[in-house]
Image 1 (cartoon, rainbow, N blue to C red):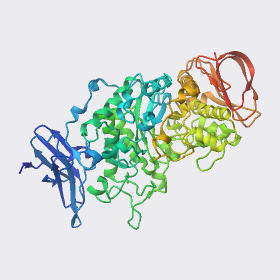
Image 2: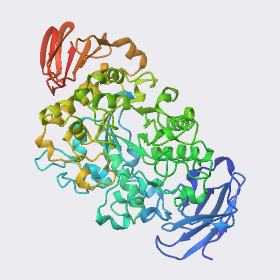
Image 3: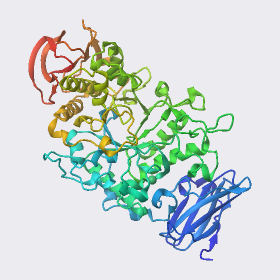
Image 4: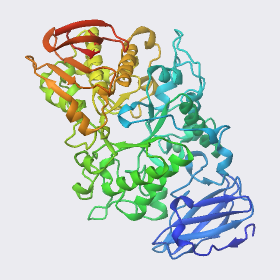
Length: 627
Ligand code: CA
Protein backbone atom coordinates (compact mmCIF):
# COMPACT_ATOMS: atom_id res chain seq x y z
CA UNK A 1 0.00 0.00 0.00
CA UNK A 2 1.47 3.25 -1.13
CA UNK A 3 -0.53 5.39 1.21
CA UNK A 4 -0.64 5.06 4.92
CA UNK A 5 -4.01 6.20 6.07
CA UNK A 6 -4.72 8.09 9.24
CA UNK A 7 -8.19 9.17 10.23
CA UNK A 8 -8.82 12.71 11.28
CA UNK A 9 -10.26 13.21 14.68
CA UNK A 10 -13.48 15.18 14.68
CA UNK A 11 -13.08 18.90 14.22
CA UNK A 12 -16.68 19.53 13.32
CA UNK A 13 -17.08 23.21 13.98
CA UNK A 14 -14.31 24.31 11.67
CA UNK A 15 -14.92 22.13 8.62
CA UNK A 16 -15.60 24.14 5.49
CA UNK A 17 -16.80 22.88 2.15
CA UNK A 18 -13.78 24.52 0.61
CA UNK A 19 -11.44 22.27 2.62
CA UNK A 20 -12.04 19.20 0.48
CA UNK A 21 -8.34 18.87 -0.19
CA UNK A 22 -5.69 20.51 1.94
CA UNK A 23 -2.16 19.91 0.76
CA UNK A 24 1.02 20.07 2.76
CA UNK A 25 4.36 18.53 1.89
CA UNK A 26 4.05 15.73 4.42
CA UNK A 27 0.33 14.92 4.13
CA UNK A 28 -2.86 15.80 2.29
CA UNK A 29 -6.16 16.01 4.16
CA UNK A 30 -9.52 15.31 2.55
CA UNK A 31 -13.00 16.26 3.76
CA UNK A 32 -16.23 15.85 1.79
CA UNK A 33 -19.75 16.58 2.95
CA UNK A 34 -22.60 14.11 2.52
CA UNK A 35 -25.53 13.41 4.79
CA UNK A 36 -26.75 10.42 2.78
CA UNK A 37 -23.61 8.44 1.89
CA UNK A 38 -23.14 5.04 3.52
CA UNK A 39 -19.54 4.90 2.39
CA UNK A 40 -17.23 7.37 0.69
CA UNK A 41 -13.81 6.94 -0.86
CA UNK A 42 -11.12 8.99 -2.52
CA UNK A 43 -9.15 7.62 -5.42
CA UNK A 44 -5.65 8.99 -5.88
CA UNK A 45 -4.15 8.80 -9.36
CA UNK A 46 -0.59 9.39 -10.51
CA UNK A 47 -1.75 11.36 -13.54
CA UNK A 48 -4.84 12.90 -15.08
CA UNK A 49 -5.44 9.97 -17.42
CA UNK A 50 -3.98 6.84 -15.85
CA UNK A 51 -6.34 4.04 -14.77
CA UNK A 52 -4.18 3.08 -11.80
CA UNK A 53 -5.23 4.47 -8.45
CA UNK A 54 -4.96 4.03 -4.72
CA UNK A 55 -8.14 4.01 -2.69
CA UNK A 56 -8.53 5.92 0.52
CA UNK A 57 -11.63 5.16 2.56
CA UNK A 58 -13.21 8.17 4.25
CA UNK A 59 -14.67 8.15 7.73
CA UNK A 60 -17.86 9.97 8.59
CA UNK A 61 -17.69 12.61 11.32
CA UNK A 62 -20.51 13.94 13.46
CA UNK A 63 -21.03 16.87 11.09
CA UNK A 64 -21.50 14.66 8.00
CA UNK A 65 -18.05 15.52 6.74
CA UNK A 66 -16.19 12.44 5.58
CA UNK A 67 -12.46 12.74 6.15
CA UNK A 68 -9.14 11.00 5.57
CA UNK A 69 -5.46 11.80 5.37
CA UNK A 70 -3.00 10.67 2.73
CA UNK A 71 0.42 10.62 4.34
CA UNK A 72 3.49 11.74 2.45
CA UNK A 73 3.93 14.28 -0.29
CA UNK A 74 1.03 13.93 -2.78
CA UNK A 75 2.04 16.92 -4.90
CA UNK A 76 1.24 16.51 -8.58
CA UNK A 77 -1.24 13.67 -8.08
CA UNK A 78 -4.92 13.73 -8.97
CA UNK A 79 -7.99 12.56 -7.09
CA UNK A 80 -11.66 11.82 -7.39
CA UNK A 81 -14.30 11.07 -4.79
CA UNK A 82 -17.26 8.74 -4.95
CA UNK A 83 -20.05 7.88 -2.57
CA UNK A 84 -22.13 4.77 -1.91
CA UNK A 85 -25.81 5.03 -1.17
CA UNK A 86 -29.02 3.15 -1.98
CA UNK A 87 -27.01 0.04 -2.76
CA UNK A 88 -24.71 1.50 -5.37
CA UNK A 89 -21.61 3.58 -5.94
CA UNK A 90 -22.20 6.90 -7.63
CA UNK A 91 -19.76 7.76 -10.44
CA UNK A 92 -16.49 9.48 -9.55
CA UNK A 93 -16.19 13.24 -9.54
CA UNK A 94 -13.55 15.81 -8.57
CA UNK A 95 -15.73 16.87 -5.61
CA UNK A 96 -17.84 20.00 -5.36
CA UNK A 97 -15.00 22.29 -4.26
CA UNK A 98 -12.03 21.25 -6.37
CA UNK A 99 -9.55 24.14 -6.55
CA UNK A 100 -7.35 22.69 -9.28
CA UNK A 101 -8.23 20.21 -11.99
CA UNK A 102 -6.89 18.29 -14.92
CA UNK A 103 -7.97 18.89 -18.50
CA UNK A 104 -11.75 19.14 -18.84
CA UNK A 105 -12.08 19.12 -15.06
CA UNK A 106 -12.53 15.37 -14.72
CA UNK A 107 -10.10 14.88 -11.85
CA UNK A 108 -9.02 17.26 -9.14
CA UNK A 109 -5.31 18.03 -8.87
CA UNK A 110 -3.24 18.14 -5.72
CA UNK A 111 -1.18 21.29 -5.98
CA UNK A 112 0.43 23.79 -3.67
CA UNK A 113 -1.68 26.90 -4.19
CA UNK A 114 1.11 29.13 -2.95
CA UNK A 115 3.16 28.23 -6.02
CA UNK A 116 0.44 29.62 -8.31
CA UNK A 117 0.98 33.19 -7.13
CA UNK A 118 2.73 35.27 -9.80
CA UNK A 119 5.63 37.48 -8.75
CA UNK A 120 4.30 40.54 -6.96
CA UNK A 121 0.93 38.96 -6.10
CA UNK A 122 1.29 39.70 -2.42
CA UNK A 123 1.60 43.40 -3.34
CA UNK A 124 -1.51 43.35 -5.54
CA UNK A 125 -4.20 45.69 -4.28
CA UNK A 126 -7.68 46.58 -5.44
CA UNK A 127 -7.74 49.95 -7.25
CA UNK A 128 -9.27 52.75 -5.25
CA UNK A 129 -13.03 53.01 -5.28
CA UNK A 130 -15.10 55.50 -3.34
CA UNK A 131 -18.72 54.89 -4.15
CA UNK A 132 -20.43 52.14 -6.18
CA UNK A 133 -22.28 54.72 -8.27
CA UNK A 134 -18.86 55.95 -9.48
CA UNK A 135 -18.50 52.57 -11.18
CA UNK A 136 -18.55 52.17 -14.96
CA UNK A 137 -18.67 48.47 -15.78
CA UNK A 138 -17.50 47.16 -19.15
CA UNK A 139 -18.70 43.63 -19.87
CA UNK A 140 -16.75 41.31 -22.11
CA UNK A 141 -16.04 37.69 -22.97
CA UNK A 142 -12.37 36.74 -23.14
CA UNK A 143 -12.68 35.63 -26.76
CA UNK A 144 -14.80 38.58 -27.88
CA UNK A 145 -12.22 40.96 -26.58
CA UNK A 146 -9.08 39.74 -28.35
CA UNK A 147 -9.79 36.94 -30.85
CA UNK A 148 -10.03 39.37 -33.76
CA UNK A 149 -7.01 39.24 -36.08
CA UNK A 150 -7.03 43.02 -35.66
CA UNK A 151 -6.76 43.01 -31.85
CA UNK A 152 -2.98 43.33 -31.95
CA UNK A 153 -2.83 40.89 -29.04
CA UNK A 154 -0.63 37.77 -29.04
CA UNK A 155 -2.41 35.52 -26.51
CA UNK A 156 -5.76 35.84 -28.28
CA UNK A 157 -8.76 34.67 -26.27
CA UNK A 158 -6.68 33.78 -23.20
CA UNK A 159 -6.37 35.10 -19.67
CA UNK A 160 -2.92 36.41 -20.57
CA UNK A 161 -4.37 38.59 -23.36
CA UNK A 162 -5.34 41.09 -20.69
CA UNK A 163 -1.75 41.34 -19.47
CA UNK A 164 -0.39 42.62 -22.81
CA UNK A 165 0.34 46.32 -22.79
CA UNK A 166 1.14 48.48 -25.79
CA UNK A 167 -1.02 46.55 -28.25
CA UNK A 168 -2.40 48.37 -31.29
CA UNK A 169 -5.09 48.06 -33.94
CA UNK A 170 -3.92 47.91 -37.59
CA UNK A 171 -4.32 51.70 -37.66
CA UNK A 172 -2.07 52.19 -34.68
CA UNK A 173 -4.76 52.94 -32.11
CA UNK A 174 -4.62 51.37 -28.67
CA UNK A 175 -6.30 48.00 -28.16
CA UNK A 176 -6.68 45.41 -25.41
CA UNK A 177 -6.07 46.51 -21.84
CA UNK A 178 -4.72 49.89 -23.03
CA UNK A 179 -8.05 50.54 -24.71
CA UNK A 180 -9.89 49.84 -21.46
CA UNK A 181 -7.66 52.32 -19.67
CA UNK A 182 -8.20 54.87 -22.44
CA UNK A 183 -11.98 54.50 -22.20
CA UNK A 184 -11.86 55.31 -18.49
CA UNK A 185 -13.95 52.39 -17.30
CA UNK A 186 -13.53 51.32 -13.68
CA UNK A 187 -14.57 47.65 -13.72
CA UNK A 188 -14.22 44.84 -16.22
CA UNK A 189 -16.98 42.22 -15.95
CA UNK A 190 -15.87 39.00 -17.59
CA UNK A 191 -18.32 36.37 -18.82
CA UNK A 192 -17.94 33.02 -17.03
CA UNK A 193 -14.34 32.02 -16.54
CA UNK A 194 -14.82 29.27 -13.96
CA UNK A 195 -14.44 25.80 -15.45
CA UNK A 196 -17.39 25.16 -17.75
CA UNK A 197 -18.37 22.19 -19.86
CA UNK A 198 -19.22 23.28 -23.38
CA UNK A 199 -15.66 23.54 -24.70
CA UNK A 200 -13.49 20.44 -25.10
CA UNK A 201 -10.18 21.51 -23.59
CA UNK A 202 -8.38 18.68 -25.38
CA UNK A 203 -9.38 20.11 -28.76
CA UNK A 204 -8.81 23.84 -28.44
CA UNK A 205 -7.36 23.97 -31.96
CA UNK A 206 -10.95 23.53 -33.15
CA UNK A 207 -11.53 26.99 -31.68
CA UNK A 208 -15.13 26.59 -30.68
CA UNK A 209 -16.90 29.44 -28.93
CA UNK A 210 -19.27 29.41 -26.00
CA UNK A 211 -20.36 32.03 -23.48
CA UNK A 212 -19.74 29.51 -20.70
CA UNK A 213 -22.98 29.51 -18.71
CA UNK A 214 -22.59 25.77 -18.07
CA UNK A 215 -20.70 25.33 -14.82
CA UNK A 216 -18.66 22.21 -14.10
CA UNK A 217 -16.09 23.17 -11.44
CA UNK A 218 -17.16 26.39 -9.76
CA UNK A 219 -13.88 27.10 -8.03
CA UNK A 220 -11.36 26.55 -10.80
CA UNK A 221 -10.65 28.79 -13.81
CA UNK A 222 -11.69 27.51 -17.23
CA UNK A 223 -8.98 25.54 -19.05
CA UNK A 224 -9.90 26.91 -22.47
CA UNK A 225 -8.53 30.32 -21.47
CA UNK A 226 -5.28 28.83 -20.18
CA UNK A 227 -2.05 28.55 -22.15
CA UNK A 228 -1.99 24.87 -21.13
CA UNK A 229 -5.21 23.24 -19.89
CA UNK A 230 -3.25 20.07 -18.99
CA UNK A 231 -1.22 21.96 -16.39
CA UNK A 232 -3.52 22.47 -13.37
CA UNK A 233 -1.43 25.36 -12.04
CA UNK A 234 -1.25 27.29 -15.33
CA UNK A 235 -4.88 28.43 -15.48
CA UNK A 236 -4.74 29.49 -11.82
CA UNK A 237 -1.53 31.45 -12.18
CA UNK A 238 -2.65 33.08 -15.44
CA UNK A 239 -5.99 34.16 -13.95
CA UNK A 240 -4.07 35.85 -11.16
CA UNK A 241 -1.74 37.48 -13.68
CA UNK A 242 -4.79 38.84 -15.50
CA UNK A 243 -6.30 40.24 -12.32
CA UNK A 244 -2.99 41.77 -11.29
CA UNK A 245 -2.49 43.42 -14.71
CA UNK A 246 -5.99 44.90 -14.60
CA UNK A 247 -5.45 46.15 -11.08
CA UNK A 248 -2.22 47.80 -12.20
CA UNK A 249 -4.21 49.50 -14.96
CA UNK A 250 -6.61 50.83 -12.32
CA UNK A 251 -9.40 48.47 -13.30
CA UNK A 252 -11.28 46.19 -10.94
CA UNK A 253 -12.48 42.73 -11.99
CA UNK A 254 -16.02 41.40 -11.75
CA UNK A 255 -16.68 37.71 -12.17
CA UNK A 256 -19.86 36.45 -13.79
CA UNK A 257 -21.01 33.60 -11.52
CA UNK A 258 -23.64 31.01 -12.39
CA UNK A 259 -24.70 29.20 -9.23
CA UNK A 260 -28.32 28.91 -10.38
CA UNK A 261 -27.86 25.70 -12.37
CA UNK A 262 -25.21 23.23 -13.49
CA UNK A 263 -24.30 21.94 -16.92
CA UNK A 264 -25.65 18.53 -16.06
CA UNK A 265 -27.51 17.78 -12.81
CA UNK A 266 -26.72 14.06 -12.71
CA UNK A 267 -23.23 14.15 -14.17
CA UNK A 268 -21.65 17.06 -12.33
CA UNK A 269 -20.01 16.91 -8.94
CA UNK A 270 -22.96 18.49 -7.11
CA UNK A 271 -25.18 15.73 -8.44
CA UNK A 272 -22.71 12.90 -7.96
CA UNK A 273 -21.32 13.53 -4.49
CA UNK A 274 -24.74 14.03 -2.90
CA UNK A 275 -27.43 13.05 -5.40
CA UNK A 276 -30.42 15.43 -5.61
CA UNK A 277 -29.52 17.46 -2.50
CA UNK A 278 -28.22 20.60 -4.22
CA UNK A 279 -31.19 20.97 -6.55
CA UNK A 280 -34.83 21.93 -6.26
CA UNK A 281 -37.20 19.21 -7.32
CA UNK A 282 -40.74 19.28 -8.60
CA UNK A 283 -43.43 17.48 -6.58
CA UNK A 284 -43.12 14.52 -8.95
CA UNK A 285 -39.40 14.20 -8.19
CA UNK A 286 -38.14 15.62 -11.47
CA UNK A 287 -35.64 18.48 -11.52
CA UNK A 288 -37.21 21.92 -11.28
CA UNK A 289 -36.06 24.17 -14.11
CA UNK A 290 -36.20 27.86 -13.22
CA UNK A 291 -32.99 28.34 -15.20
CA UNK A 292 -34.42 27.00 -18.43
CA UNK A 293 -31.26 24.90 -18.62
CA UNK A 294 -32.67 21.67 -17.20
CA UNK A 295 -32.24 22.21 -13.46
CA UNK A 296 -32.11 24.84 -10.74
CA UNK A 297 -30.00 24.78 -7.60
CA UNK A 298 -31.43 25.07 -4.09
CA UNK A 299 -29.75 28.00 -2.35
CA UNK A 300 -32.37 27.57 0.37
CA UNK A 301 -30.74 24.24 1.33
CA UNK A 302 -28.15 24.85 4.02
CA UNK A 303 -25.15 23.37 2.25
CA UNK A 304 -25.93 24.91 -1.15
CA UNK A 305 -26.11 28.26 0.59
CA UNK A 306 -22.82 27.61 2.36
CA UNK A 307 -21.34 26.51 -0.93
CA UNK A 308 -22.22 29.82 -2.59
CA UNK A 309 -21.02 31.89 0.35
CA UNK A 310 -17.71 30.01 0.54
CA UNK A 311 -17.23 30.01 -3.23
CA UNK A 312 -17.51 33.79 -3.73
CA UNK A 313 -15.39 34.34 -0.62
CA UNK A 314 -12.76 32.01 -2.03
CA UNK A 315 -12.60 33.90 -5.36
CA UNK A 316 -12.41 37.22 -3.54
CA UNK A 317 -9.56 36.04 -1.30
CA UNK A 318 -7.54 33.69 -3.51
CA UNK A 319 -7.98 35.57 -6.82
CA UNK A 320 -8.60 39.13 -5.51
CA UNK A 321 -11.88 39.33 -7.45
CA UNK A 322 -13.60 42.69 -6.87
CA UNK A 323 -17.20 41.94 -7.69
CA UNK A 324 -19.73 39.28 -8.61
CA UNK A 325 -22.49 39.37 -11.20
CA UNK A 326 -25.07 36.70 -10.37
CA UNK A 327 -26.66 35.00 -13.33
CA UNK A 328 -30.42 34.49 -12.87
CA UNK A 329 -30.16 35.79 -9.32
CA UNK A 330 -33.93 35.51 -9.03
CA UNK A 331 -33.49 31.74 -8.59
CA UNK A 332 -31.58 32.31 -5.36
CA UNK A 333 -33.37 33.10 -2.13
CA UNK A 334 -32.84 36.51 -0.59
CA UNK A 335 -31.37 35.20 2.65
CA UNK A 336 -28.54 33.62 0.67
CA UNK A 337 -27.79 36.90 -1.07
CA UNK A 338 -27.73 38.68 2.29
CA UNK A 339 -25.29 36.10 3.67
CA UNK A 340 -23.08 36.45 0.59
CA UNK A 341 -23.04 40.22 1.12
CA UNK A 342 -22.13 39.78 4.78
CA UNK A 343 -19.31 37.32 3.98
CA UNK A 344 -17.83 39.63 1.34
CA UNK A 345 -18.08 42.59 3.69
CA UNK A 346 -15.72 40.77 6.02
CA UNK A 347 -13.17 40.58 3.19
CA UNK A 348 -13.74 44.05 1.68
CA UNK A 349 -17.01 46.00 1.70
CA UNK A 350 -16.15 47.57 -1.66
CA UNK A 351 -16.61 44.23 -3.44
CA UNK A 352 -19.66 44.65 -5.68
CA UNK A 353 -22.66 42.30 -5.82
CA UNK A 354 -25.43 42.54 -8.37
CA UNK A 355 -27.32 40.26 -10.67
CA UNK A 356 -30.25 39.46 -12.84
CA UNK A 357 -33.33 39.94 -10.67
CA UNK A 358 -35.30 37.37 -12.59
CA UNK A 359 -35.35 33.71 -13.60
CA UNK A 360 -35.74 32.13 -17.02
CA UNK A 361 -38.78 30.09 -15.94
CA UNK A 362 -40.75 29.92 -12.68
CA UNK A 363 -38.49 28.66 -9.86
CA UNK A 364 -39.78 25.95 -7.51
CA UNK A 365 -39.65 28.16 -4.43
CA UNK A 366 -41.98 30.81 -2.96
CA UNK A 367 -41.68 33.86 -5.20
CA UNK A 368 -41.56 36.44 -2.44
CA UNK A 369 -38.53 34.77 -0.83
CA UNK A 370 -36.49 35.00 -4.01
CA UNK A 371 -33.93 37.65 -5.04
CA UNK A 372 -36.27 39.06 -7.68
CA UNK A 373 -35.79 42.64 -8.85
CA UNK A 374 -38.89 43.96 -7.11
CA UNK A 375 -37.42 42.97 -3.72
CA UNK A 376 -34.02 44.55 -4.33
CA UNK A 377 -34.64 47.18 -1.64
CA UNK A 378 -34.69 44.38 0.96
CA UNK A 379 -31.12 43.30 0.05
CA UNK A 380 -28.88 46.24 0.92
CA UNK A 381 -25.92 46.72 -1.46
CA UNK A 382 -27.04 43.95 -3.78
CA UNK A 383 -27.97 45.45 -7.14
CA UNK A 384 -30.15 44.34 -10.03
CA UNK A 385 -30.10 44.99 -13.76
CA UNK A 386 -32.68 47.57 -14.77
CA UNK A 387 -34.71 46.15 -17.62
CA UNK A 388 -36.90 49.23 -16.95
CA UNK A 389 -34.41 51.73 -18.35
CA UNK A 390 -33.25 49.26 -21.00
CA UNK A 391 -36.68 48.63 -22.44
CA UNK A 392 -37.67 52.27 -22.19
CA UNK A 393 -34.61 53.45 -24.12
CA UNK A 394 -34.27 50.87 -26.88
CA UNK A 395 -37.39 48.67 -26.65
CA UNK A 396 -38.08 45.28 -25.09
CA UNK A 397 -36.09 42.23 -26.24
CA UNK A 398 -39.42 40.46 -26.71
CA UNK A 399 -40.38 42.62 -29.69
CA UNK A 400 -38.78 44.88 -32.29
CA UNK A 401 -40.47 48.14 -31.26
CA UNK A 402 -38.55 51.38 -30.98
CA UNK A 403 -37.62 52.83 -27.60
CA UNK A 404 -37.34 56.44 -26.49
CA UNK A 405 -33.87 56.84 -27.99
CA UNK A 406 -35.02 55.45 -31.32
CA UNK A 407 -38.11 57.61 -31.62
CA UNK A 408 -40.83 56.23 -29.34
CA UNK A 409 -41.88 58.91 -26.83
CA UNK A 410 -43.98 56.35 -24.92
CA UNK A 411 -40.73 55.32 -23.23
CA UNK A 412 -40.11 58.75 -21.69
CA UNK A 413 -41.75 58.06 -18.34
CA UNK A 414 -39.71 54.92 -17.71
CA UNK A 415 -36.52 56.60 -18.92
CA UNK A 416 -37.13 59.22 -16.22
CA UNK A 417 -37.66 56.48 -13.61
CA UNK A 418 -34.39 54.93 -14.75
CA UNK A 419 -32.52 58.23 -14.53
CA UNK A 420 -33.65 58.34 -10.90
CA UNK A 421 -32.44 54.73 -10.44
CA UNK A 422 -35.95 53.27 -10.05
CA UNK A 423 -35.97 53.99 -6.34
CA UNK A 424 -39.30 52.19 -5.95
CA UNK A 425 -37.51 48.82 -6.24
CA UNK A 426 -33.91 49.91 -5.64
CA UNK A 427 -33.39 51.06 -2.08
CA UNK A 428 -30.31 53.04 -3.05
CA UNK A 429 -29.03 54.18 -6.47
CA UNK A 430 -26.14 51.68 -6.48
CA UNK A 431 -28.69 48.86 -6.50
CA UNK A 432 -29.88 49.97 -9.95
CA UNK A 433 -27.62 48.72 -12.73
CA UNK A 434 -28.28 51.15 -15.59
CA UNK A 435 -27.76 49.48 -18.95
CA UNK A 436 -29.23 49.03 -22.39
CA UNK A 437 -27.33 46.05 -23.72
CA UNK A 438 -25.25 43.13 -22.45
CA UNK A 439 -24.19 39.80 -23.96
CA UNK A 440 -27.85 38.71 -24.06
CA UNK A 441 -30.17 39.82 -26.85
CA UNK A 442 -29.18 42.16 -29.68
CA UNK A 443 -26.12 44.34 -29.36
CA UNK A 444 -27.02 48.00 -29.61
CA UNK A 445 -26.23 48.51 -33.29
CA UNK A 446 -28.33 45.47 -34.25
CA UNK A 447 -31.16 46.41 -31.89
CA UNK A 448 -31.48 49.86 -33.41
CA UNK A 449 -31.20 48.41 -36.91
CA UNK A 450 -34.10 45.97 -36.38
CA UNK A 451 -36.35 48.53 -34.70
CA UNK A 452 -35.54 51.53 -36.92
CA UNK A 453 -34.50 49.81 -40.16
CA UNK A 454 -35.34 52.69 -42.47
CA UNK A 455 -33.12 55.20 -40.73
CA UNK A 456 -29.69 56.11 -42.13
CA UNK A 457 -26.54 54.85 -40.43
CA UNK A 458 -25.87 58.39 -39.28
CA UNK A 459 -29.27 58.55 -37.57
CA UNK A 460 -28.83 55.08 -36.06
CA UNK A 461 -25.51 56.16 -34.57
CA UNK A 462 -27.19 59.26 -33.13
CA UNK A 463 -29.78 56.97 -31.49
CA UNK A 464 -26.95 54.77 -30.19
CA UNK A 465 -25.22 57.75 -28.57
CA UNK A 466 -28.45 59.10 -27.14
CA UNK A 467 -29.34 55.77 -25.50
CA UNK A 468 -25.88 55.32 -23.98
CA UNK A 469 -25.91 58.93 -22.77
CA UNK A 470 -29.02 58.22 -20.72
CA UNK A 471 -27.26 55.22 -19.14
CA UNK A 472 -24.23 57.33 -18.24
CA UNK A 473 -26.19 60.17 -16.67
CA UNK A 474 -28.49 57.86 -14.69
CA UNK A 475 -28.06 57.92 -10.92
CA UNK A 476 -27.67 54.12 -10.95
CA UNK A 477 -24.46 52.20 -11.58
CA UNK A 478 -23.33 52.37 -15.24
CA UNK A 479 -22.91 49.22 -17.29
CA UNK A 480 -21.77 49.05 -20.92
CA UNK A 481 -21.54 45.99 -23.13
CA UNK A 482 -18.01 45.78 -24.44
CA UNK A 483 -17.56 46.55 -28.10
CA UNK A 484 -20.59 48.82 -28.40
CA UNK A 485 -18.11 51.71 -28.44
CA UNK A 486 -16.49 50.11 -31.52
CA UNK A 487 -19.90 49.78 -33.20
CA UNK A 488 -19.87 45.99 -33.03
CA UNK A 489 -22.50 44.01 -34.86
CA UNK A 490 -23.52 40.38 -34.44
CA UNK A 491 -25.16 40.52 -37.86
CA UNK A 492 -28.63 40.26 -36.41
CA UNK A 493 -27.97 37.28 -34.13
CA UNK A 494 -29.64 37.99 -30.80
CA UNK A 495 -28.39 34.91 -28.95
CA UNK A 496 -24.75 34.40 -29.89
CA UNK A 497 -23.89 32.03 -27.03
CA UNK A 498 -22.32 29.51 -29.36
CA UNK A 499 -21.92 31.55 -32.52
CA UNK A 500 -18.44 31.56 -34.02
CA UNK A 501 -15.80 34.13 -33.20
CA UNK A 502 -16.61 35.90 -36.46
CA UNK A 503 -19.96 36.92 -34.93
CA UNK A 504 -18.77 37.57 -31.39
CA UNK A 505 -15.44 39.35 -31.81
CA UNK A 506 -15.04 43.03 -31.12
CA UNK A 507 -14.12 44.70 -34.45
CA UNK A 508 -10.96 46.60 -33.56
CA UNK A 509 -10.70 47.94 -37.11
CA UNK A 510 -13.78 50.03 -36.34
CA UNK A 511 -11.82 52.16 -33.93
CA UNK A 512 -10.42 54.03 -36.92
CA UNK A 513 -13.59 53.84 -39.00
CA UNK A 514 -16.04 55.25 -36.44
CA UNK A 515 -15.53 57.87 -33.76
CA UNK A 516 -18.33 56.43 -31.62
CA UNK A 517 -15.81 55.30 -29.00
CA UNK A 518 -14.65 58.88 -28.54
CA UNK A 519 -18.20 59.90 -27.68
CA UNK A 520 -18.48 57.01 -25.19
CA UNK A 521 -15.11 57.92 -23.71
CA UNK A 522 -16.12 61.55 -23.26
CA UNK A 523 -19.47 60.56 -21.74
CA UNK A 524 -17.67 58.29 -19.26
CA UNK A 525 -15.34 61.18 -18.44
CA UNK A 526 -18.32 63.52 -18.03
CA UNK A 527 -19.94 61.10 -15.61
CA UNK A 528 -16.73 60.67 -13.65
CA UNK A 529 -16.14 64.43 -13.54
CA UNK A 530 -19.58 65.29 -12.21
CA UNK A 531 -20.82 63.99 -8.90
CA UNK A 532 -24.26 65.28 -9.85
CA UNK A 533 -24.73 62.24 -12.11
CA UNK A 534 -23.84 59.86 -9.29
CA UNK A 535 -25.19 61.44 -6.16
CA UNK A 536 -24.94 58.07 -4.47
CA UNK A 537 -27.89 58.06 -2.11
CA UNK A 538 -31.65 57.99 -2.47
CA UNK A 539 -31.93 61.03 -0.25
CA UNK A 540 -29.58 63.15 -2.35
CA UNK A 541 -31.37 62.07 -5.53
CA UNK A 542 -34.72 63.13 -4.06
CA UNK A 543 -33.29 66.45 -2.90
CA UNK A 544 -31.36 67.48 -6.00
CA UNK A 545 -33.06 66.03 -9.06
CA UNK A 546 -36.15 67.25 -10.88
CA UNK A 547 -37.61 67.02 -14.35
CA UNK A 548 -38.49 70.29 -16.04
CA UNK A 549 -41.65 70.44 -18.09
CA UNK A 550 -41.38 70.12 -21.81
CA UNK A 551 -43.89 70.83 -24.55
CA UNK A 552 -42.73 67.76 -26.46
CA UNK A 553 -43.29 64.19 -25.20
CA UNK A 554 -40.06 63.17 -26.92
CA UNK A 555 -37.90 65.60 -24.92
CA UNK A 556 -36.78 64.86 -21.37
CA UNK A 557 -35.28 67.73 -19.35
CA UNK A 558 -33.39 66.27 -16.40
CA UNK A 559 -32.12 68.84 -13.94
CA UNK A 560 -29.69 68.28 -11.08
CA UNK A 561 -29.50 71.42 -9.01
CA UNK A 562 -28.10 73.03 -5.87
CA UNK A 563 -24.83 71.15 -6.29
CA UNK A 564 -22.62 73.64 -4.43
CA UNK A 565 -20.19 71.60 -2.33
CA UNK A 566 -20.99 68.40 -4.23
CA UNK A 567 -19.90 69.12 -7.79
CA UNK A 568 -17.73 71.61 -9.66
CA UNK A 569 -20.94 72.65 -11.43
CA UNK A 570 -23.67 74.54 -9.59
CA UNK A 571 -26.25 72.64 -11.58
CA UNK A 572 -26.48 70.22 -14.49
CA UNK A 573 -29.15 70.17 -17.18
CA UNK A 574 -29.53 67.18 -19.50
CA UNK A 575 -31.89 67.39 -22.44
CA UNK A 576 -32.63 64.11 -24.21
CA UNK A 577 -34.32 64.52 -27.57
CA UNK A 578 -35.74 61.22 -28.84
CA UNK A 579 -37.44 62.76 -31.86
CA UNK A 580 -36.40 63.37 -35.47
CA UNK A 581 -37.00 67.13 -35.04
CA UNK A 582 -35.06 69.97 -33.48
CA UNK A 583 -36.86 70.62 -30.20
CA UNK A 584 -36.56 73.85 -28.26
CA UNK A 585 -37.03 74.21 -24.52
CA UNK A 586 -36.86 76.75 -21.73
CA UNK A 587 -34.29 76.09 -19.04
CA UNK A 588 -33.10 78.16 -16.07
CA UNK A 589 -31.25 81.27 -17.35
CA UNK A 590 -27.53 80.87 -16.55
CA UNK A 591 -23.94 80.66 -17.83
CA UNK A 592 -23.33 77.13 -19.01
CA UNK A 593 -20.47 75.02 -20.26
CA UNK A 594 -21.76 72.76 -23.02
CA UNK A 595 -20.57 69.20 -22.31
CA UNK A 596 -22.57 67.49 -25.04
CA UNK A 597 -24.55 68.74 -28.02
CA UNK A 598 -25.61 67.45 -31.44
CA UNK A 599 -24.09 63.97 -30.94
CA UNK A 600 -20.76 65.32 -29.77
CA UNK A 601 -19.39 65.31 -26.23
CA UNK A 602 -16.33 66.72 -24.52
CA UNK A 603 -15.71 66.54 -20.78
CA UNK A 604 -13.67 69.79 -21.00
CA UNK A 605 -16.53 71.51 -22.79
CA UNK A 606 -17.56 72.13 -26.39
CA UNK A 607 -18.11 75.83 -25.63
CA UNK A 608 -19.94 78.26 -23.37
CA UNK A 609 -23.37 79.84 -23.62
CA UNK A 610 -25.44 82.20 -21.55
CA UNK A 611 -29.08 81.39 -22.15
CA UNK A 612 -32.48 80.40 -20.83
CA UNK A 613 -33.54 78.77 -24.05
CA UNK A 614 -31.99 75.91 -25.97
CA UNK A 615 -32.51 74.01 -29.23
CA UNK A 616 -31.74 70.29 -29.04
CA UNK A 617 -30.79 68.56 -32.28
CA UNK A 618 -32.66 65.43 -33.47
CA UNK A 619 -31.92 62.15 -31.66
CA UNK A 620 -29.28 63.63 -29.40
CA UNK A 621 -28.47 64.88 -25.95
CA UNK A 622 -27.48 68.35 -24.84
CA UNK A 623 -25.72 68.44 -21.48
CA UNK A 624 -25.07 71.74 -19.76
CA UNK A 625 -23.03 72.45 -16.64
CA UNK A 626 -23.72 75.71 -14.83
CA UNK A 627 -20.44 77.20 -13.66
CA1 CA B 1 -13.82 23.42 -19.00
